[in-house]
Length: 501
Image (tube, rainbow, N blue to C red):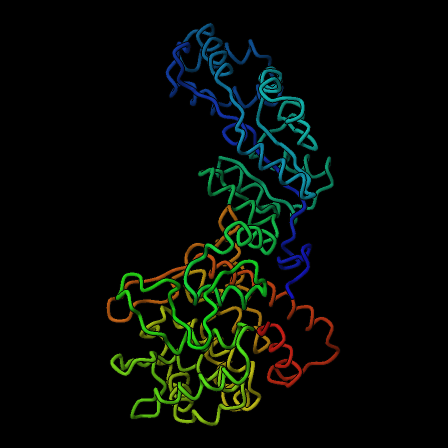
């Protein structure tokens, strides 16, 4: 039920069609200090920043004239200047990782250009430092010598725009010098300063790639190795893909762990939380067995009538998120009325923001709201009762700093009440790792010990689902001919279809 493979998961104004790269110190590296160089690297860098060298790069003076002028300016011999630059040219090497990325960008349909401050003689040397096949990755290479202009002068950028017909608002510019990036940004380019190769590759993949397709590839490459029954069940619900998971198909009650406790007692009791998720998501348990398990659950209410966490009276714990998940199971099976006091407490937690610092077992406020959105999706009665308060609380979370898992949970919760959290969606997109996953996300914690547990598979699955749901909501809203309440039965019946698999 996911979005099409070619769906655009960027705001319409952020679809990029073009990338413009600098060459030196981005796609090619060189050294200013080599054993063959008669000049210190510091002097060589100063020469490169001199007005005489600028004129040389623009083709306004010859190579010999440039060497003569800078030699005089820096009180060195022209012969040493020439020898130093010949040594620097010899040190030039292409950056295979970046060239591989360019190949990937080209294969995805993007136009790729190079734009470099470089003299004609230096370009002649540089052009031999990569294979013809590698140079063919560029639609065109623009040099300052041929344009008679150089970065950061606006004229050079306008020359490239005019020659290519590119739209700066749909183009990305990558350069190692901030002043060059600033000029590009002033014309509408999305500018990236090349200060960390890994970070730049991640940024380009996140800006140009399809996050859902990349996330699916990550999940497929890590399938059935994503730990814990609880996380596996959430991945199953988010993706609808049984091939990705390998949870223990318990005959009734579920356990959080797959093969005994980890960082806790080996004999760990079954819990109502994982059981509720399991009975809601999995399809291997018949209806009669589900009701038998729910009958057993009712024995684990405390003196306040609130559902407890474990099928173990010696562990009297309560957690509002666990209560929400139990309520979702009961309301999904027509038995929500049996847990009225638990529901009352959940409502108080919502209205009084008791969840704001997380709960006993769950790390963040957004996780409470996410699981509550699942409950609202299965019960029109509760949508009527809690919908307005829920929408107010989810709106309060927009823009609050959080890890990727919490952002995904927040975005999903927002879609259930017809809202698109644009700001957090953009942040979430920017955090996708190079391998397609999202890593930063604390899901739950071991009660009093405070040990935090994360699962990259679950975080990735929920982040991917958040983007799919936003796409589906946008499509639904664009098809609508008239405004309707976000709490209408039509929207919530849609929400049920996209949250239940």
